Image (cartoon, rainbow, N blue to C red):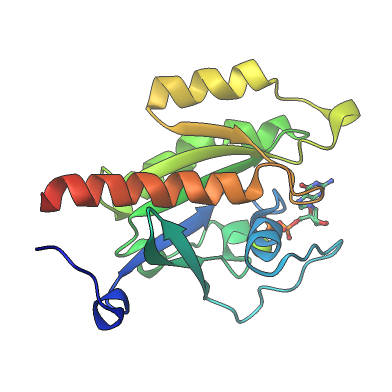
Length: 184
Ligand code: GDP
Ligand code: MG
């Protein structure tokens, strides 16, 4: 009979999830908002930090999401293969107020697929949805790219918290679903 004791609960899941996308799209702030409820106007917060582990709950299971953030190396297109290694989820982020960051998404997808498993669960994120007057990428454009590439899609704001937890939860839940289908 399936029965989960406290001891077994501590053996629950650990998922590595990577944040990728151009410099200054808000990757570090999405993580800061999600994991610590914080926001930084000038974020130098990630210097020296490789990842942060966040406990989450899916169907009563405790899941540890180990969320990796760059330390600014994406500025030099120098994200290493070690960063991607073992990742089962990815948040692919652009800034809705800078179209050039959306134009880079194809390159990030290529890089992700070069360095990690093809079926890494990926969500395309249009961040800074609070910047309504400065919008350069329409919601329809984001959605269309996500559909074409088979990605989840959400617009978020690390500033006002909109959809931030939902974005991380979508990825974690889908990884969990894939895993439990495989196990069963
Ligand atoms: P990263 O380089 O992708 O890690 O981006 P950061 O998290 O360092 O953010 C870059 C800049 O964008 C900072 O000045 C942040 O305050 C700002 N920023 C991040 N997320 C948002 C957001 O959702 N809305 C707005 N208005 N600004 C944001
Ligand atoms: Mg950063």
